[in-house]
Amino acid sequence: MASSDANIKGDLTVESTAALSQTSITSTKNARGETGPTIRPPDCAFGWIPTLAVMVNYMFIFGASNSYGVFSTYYLNQKFVGTSASTLSWIGSLITTFMLGCSFLTGALADKKGYRLTAYIGTILCTAAYILASFCNHVWQLILTQGILFGLGASFLFAPSVSIPPQWFSKHRGLASGVAVAGSSLGGLWFTAATQAMIDSIGAEWALRILGILTFVVTGVMNLFYFRRVPAKPRKNILELQAAKRLTFWLVSLESFAMYTGYWALTFYIGTTARQLGGTFQDGSNLLLVLNAGSVVGRILAGLIADKFGSINTLLLSLLLTVVIEMPLWIKATSLAPLYVLCALYGMVSPTFISLNPVIVSNHFDTDVLASVMGMTNLFSGIGGLVGNQVQGVIYDKYDKHEQFTNTIVFSAMFVLFAGLVIACLRFHIIRKRTDKRFFQKV
Image 1 (tube, rainbow, N blue to C red):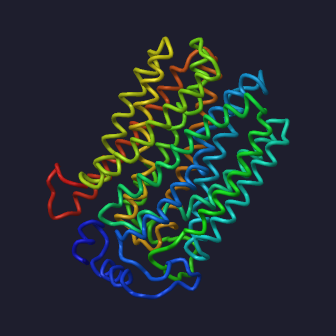
Image 2 (image 1 turned 60 degrees about the vertical axis):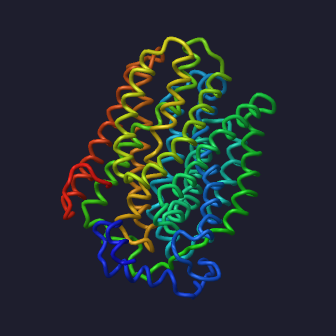
Image 3 (image 1 turned 45 degrees about the vertical axis):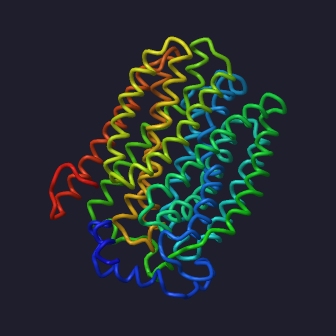
């Protein structure tokens, strides 16, 4: 077991892997009861229970950001007409920024105080954010509630969620992570459709209230199934500072920053693009549905491919394909048809980094501190989301002048390409440390 895990983890020591293997078959119980009746071995059937709970919670954690395009289109074209896109983009960008940026603290809290307690704090904050936002009539109020407060609550839910599937699986780690993260796209599907339908029928205010009630009930139940497989190690420092001494950590963090800088442009602006080409608000909603449907398929397939050919190889290929798909299809679109093709392909290829980054981190860092390490890398993701969304809003206002998206698209694609170059460097770094230095190998 030790030697096989050492091959998987690359730069993990054989001693630490052997200790982890011994822990996985010890019949003990965490003081908070979060390991279930026993500490089970990896790849056991029981691991699918917390993994599926994460999948459901991801529907609500990421469903808000994946479907924000519906609210964005409504705010930009109806409720706050005349308000700049860069101003309104603060709402959506702060959801992502606080969800990811604060997870370096919420991840440490999850490792130290328990997954369930951390998740329930998130449930309460997210519910409060929706309810308060439903009474807001000014952009700054929505920034504080639908943006900051919801993002903070999502961080408390996200931090334990991201570390559960890799903790429970080894051989099928990519698949488990892909299945869990597919929940974010499934959430985007029904969140997008439901939000658009509710805004059209009962108004945006009641749409927010109903989403808040659903979030409270569903995530409150799913949090009960947040079991750890491996108890966290007691430590004095809040942050896992040892991780920051390794180049692998910084390369993953830089890739995360670059991807979140460029990734959200299509999600936030595809609805407005449809309107520019003569489409309706419903067309914008339908495009987001196609985008999220493609993501469901793509994230699961990416997990399967990663288990066979390597998570870094799979991620590198997907990032390069994202650039090839995004630029020509979006820039050259003169009707709605190319936009549907764009959303389907972009959805299948681009979001694989969300499911594969936790796999890469878990392959190269100890599983018992995974929430903390992922939280630290996600700090850079949050910064990237904030920078990217604000800059894209400024570019659309100042250079594209609300008439097209050419400059916004180029900005987005170049950061995705940069992320691909960083992953290529990570691949070289890992191969360089191995005995087998062949270029074509599973990484």
